[in-house]
Amino acid sequence: MVRQIAQERVAPRAAEIDEKAEYPHDLRKLLAEQDILGLPFDEEYGGTGTGSLTLNIAVEELAKACASTALILMVQELGSLPIKLFASEELKQRYLPRLASGEWTPAFALSEVEAGSDPGGMRTRAVRDGDGWVLNGEKNWITNLGIADLFVVFAVTNPDEGHARGISAFVVERDWPASRSASSSTRWASAARQPGSPYSPMCGCPRRT
Image 1 (cartoon, helix red, strand yellow):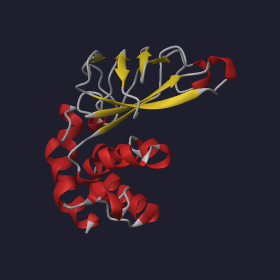
Image 2 (image 1 turned 90 degrees about the horizontal axis):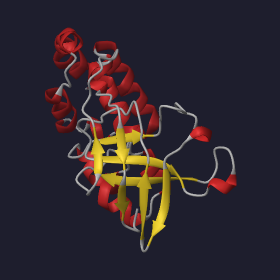
Image 3 (image 1 turned 180 degrees about the vertical axis):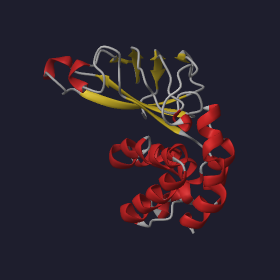
């Protein structure tokens, strides 16, 4: 099914996507309607429950037709992975069904200007504030920045633990107060990537995150 969709619906749009460097919202909607965005998720959260092999085959089939469209599925997996692996059941129930259905789009906020993707150089900090956390810092090169509904933001919570340790991941919803982002202004190899610079997660997170 994925191969047929890639050949018949995705491939004809590939050149236009690359030329205009515009996010293909129509193809994202198509992937959601066909349950392709549900491939990274277990059945109990509304996904297909078909496992990593099926997911990777689907990514390959889409990438043959259009790398940008394949990246939509890849980031749906990457952006939700910390939630799937480490979040509380409350957070899983809150977010994973929306991600599996394609209703919500995630973003993975790790990289920074000074550190790149090296967690050891991370400067974003998170400190306790009552029952929640306050995040303060700036991220860069964030895939899906301009369209994401939620961000998984990495921040140092215990700097005394040393290089690349004492780091936590926080779920930050786009409409939470003081969560600021700049729209994408740079054209990258994959138009659907929607990179952004900068993203400043200076906001408060409730304790459940």
